[in-house]
Length: 72
Figure (tube, rainbow, N blue to C red):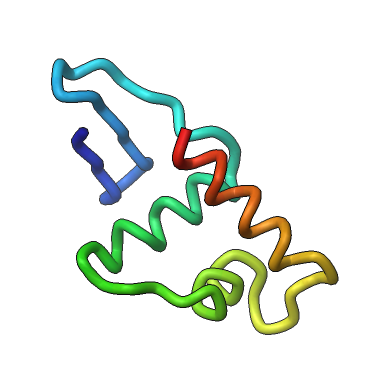
C-alpha cells in the first residue's frame, strides 16, 4: 500500500488502485497513525488528535471502533 498525506489523503494498493478511507474521522485517525509511522501512538494522543482537549463521553469506545474499521 502507498499513502499520500501531503494534500488530500491518498491511499493506493500496490497495483495503483485508489482506496477510499471513509469519512473525516477515519481519515484523521489514519493520518495521525501515518505521521507516527514506526512509533507507538497511545490512545490519549489519538483521542486528543481526533476530539481535542475535551473528548466527548464514549470517545474511547469510538476510537476502538474507528481502529477496527481501519483494519478491515
